[in-house]
Length: 527
Image (cartoon, rainbow, N blue to C red; front, top):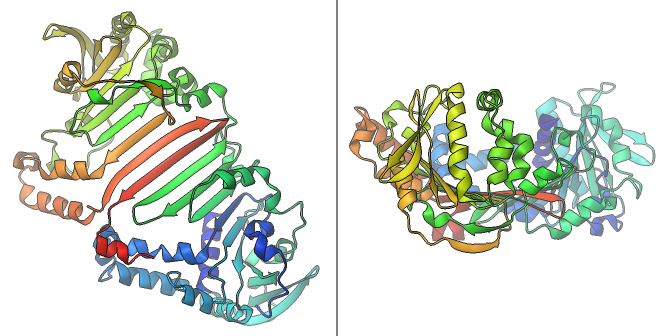
């Protein structure tokens, strides 16, 4: 299904007979000619504005670094080849018009319940669009034999390898919109071009509500209620947006929740103190969770992993009642680059039976609990179960403070210690000492709009890697370090990645944002 939709996008954007008389559908927006019952809908609100922003990708330094690896002298040459394959330069309104399309209007695509997909294109010059589609049909499918077929009151033009053979590409134009499809979807184009009022996407009140609250975006996708795509998820519907600018690339998913109510509470930000001041200043990843941890009970097994979860069950340790029910909103955590990560070993394996992740990144964190009195009894119970999953927790004293020191076959694990009504956790143990000794000012309780916030500071990570001692690079450091630094230099306009998740009024929202810092000269080239 995804391949078919992608191919249709390429076909149509690479690009009828005379256009029919335009009606109010042109002014009402593309939602008035897209089907309400589709599996998925994709809409580009403004072909001109969104296409022009593709030039932004040429200005990102990493694109210029990767392009030579693909055989192109620079990022612009690579982009030029892409638009050549498409057949129309989306970066230029004039070129879009040459393809017969109206750059000021929307473009859409629909995937039907049958898996068939078709495009809806804004027509400005029907003859030019016809010529473009005919050229595509000849060049891509060897199908230059044109024909017409009547589907109800709609005329569908088709292209076949020869007369009498099944059509490979077809289109119909109605009210200033072209409905374009290939192969099995061609017999359905007439119906797609003549939707009744009930069948139109404009009748979907849930989409209307999503569009009303959506911020600026360059592309959106809609998965309505009942879409098979959402069956494995806890969402009743999903509204996905993508936006590009000179400062960020952002993707957002929002949807009505149909899963367990307690899980929805886990995504709802609560009033919480901010313990971020306890985290180390050199952290390149910082996270904060302010949801109701009790709601994580139904997914505790998945969060722990099957081996740890089974060990707790066999040891009679109830994670929900012993841990989740005792946590207060406001847990914070951070990752810092290790002092001497084994860079000479290359990319580490993610199997903790073979690799200690804390050899590469140090962990620091603090989790508020209902009472200081619950900390040590719970840790003692965990210590009793830990050998079942291959770990050892030993109660020790360090600088006059009680802590649980954790080890397993690969070395130090996550250590725990009480800090008033907060559980400090970290690895290695020196990071735990720092959290316990921190005198950072904890911010007072306030409502947190997002239940989960995670930020990756790419600049801080890059600077930490550059500052590593020669010993971290091993015998091959003379080659490994320059190569790594070269990659860092090529990506230094990628500044930060942030992830947030929240819930409100029965809906959840997840946002991923990549912050950019283009050079002024590069940013000035972006429309």
